[in-house]
Length: 301
Image (cartoon, helix red, strand yellow):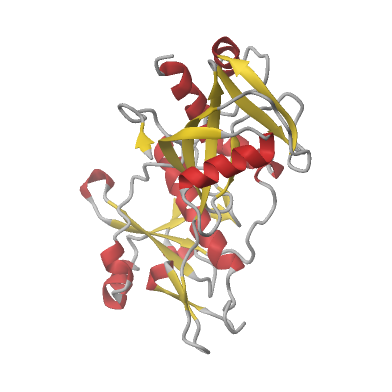
């Protein structure tokens, strides 16, 4: 899979966390315990919702603010300002399996976070949500225990080890004679269009996943798949792999079990939509589909 001629240089939302993940500390119980002191920072959340301080930044407390008997996850080391403060978050009572668009309040809060805070929140949310939804062993069903500072769960019953999941998802543009294929999924608001997307399945490459998903949803065959960029997406925990491809024709056979509409759009129409001027509603700036469409406009025709 080829990368774009010079690679994507724009900012990707949820990427670029400002803290050191400090993987070398996770398995060292003594070192980790030594960081759990009065200087440590505790991320304040309402279940999985971010709480903000009076500056509109992520709100932090101390470990004294952690719920009693909560499972604590080590997020990393904050070295801002020359100091070293360990950062922790608590696993909530339950995870969140609701559709990502079902919480408009969350999207409004995230829209106002600075890039570093958004990245830190996204990583923390993915991790603690996984713990909340994986408290039992997939092998034997017994309760599991947190390990490696929260980057692992162990089963004391059958000795299985479980690790936080990241599911790869391809999100792709198909181009034909200067037009882009964009779709509206079932249940989406009227006029909201984005790049097609789908999970990478076991036993296939990214290129194969792109070709399969586009064909399944639109009936169009694509080739020359090109990687553009990727994005961690914490709903619940995915890696969005943004790609571009070329279609062999523009005849659509839409899978109506997944898609409400699929259309082809010119460069002028895509550019107008990204400016909020129609003819369709473009993905919001924190979605990599927005970056992907802008990348397409910026690359030589």
